[in-house]
Length: 295
Image 1: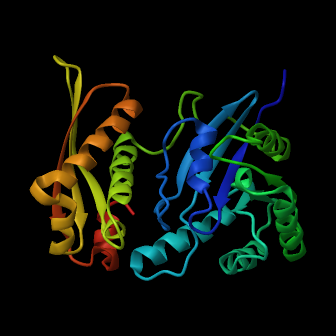
Image 2 (image 1 turned 30 degrees about the vertical axis):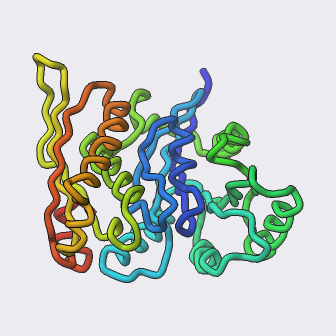
């Protein structure tokens, strides 16, 4: 009987290096928000990869950055705390001529890690081999990474190699989750994140970062087979509320339409989605409100 391998792998890095894209590529489902705006991921999201005689539980952490509010502090603390809970750390970066200042900060934190740390260089499809080699050289001088794996999470380049390397470095262990489970997060959380992704996509500047989404009600209509979802979008200012709603409700309608399409793909059923917008002033600096909204 072949022995089973399993373990927990943290995906860590500065904002916008493709951590969530990597996670979604591995799992084959949209679990983590993808946006070109930094500080998109707010929670440590567990995603489960089931392979031949192995199960890898990935933790997508919030990007490590200098926090501007209580929510930001909680996000960074959450990312740091993961290092003591996993078997392997994947440190994600992109091709650089020199080490990115934010990466230096992360590397200092990684020096205390008691598990193997792998350097994953993402977005290599858009640069020359010489640039990749230069990145490897300068990062290896700074930290003793177990191995360096260049990938393109967007195009899927070298993903199988990365998974095989991880499997070979995992301990023997149990199957932590049933094989048909791809995340520890409830459906409502994933749906709220899909809506928040559309807010990030459609809105500009600080407005989307001051938003949160709560699924107020969700039920299946047995006669029609439609899943009914009522969701509230919280923002910090009346001016932000007006922007989210848009002229004649146009912006909110676009956000709702785009959200519904992805939610239907996720649930595998037709969806009737209703969105409301409410103001919770400075909620990102209010610990009790942060907790009530699931962060």
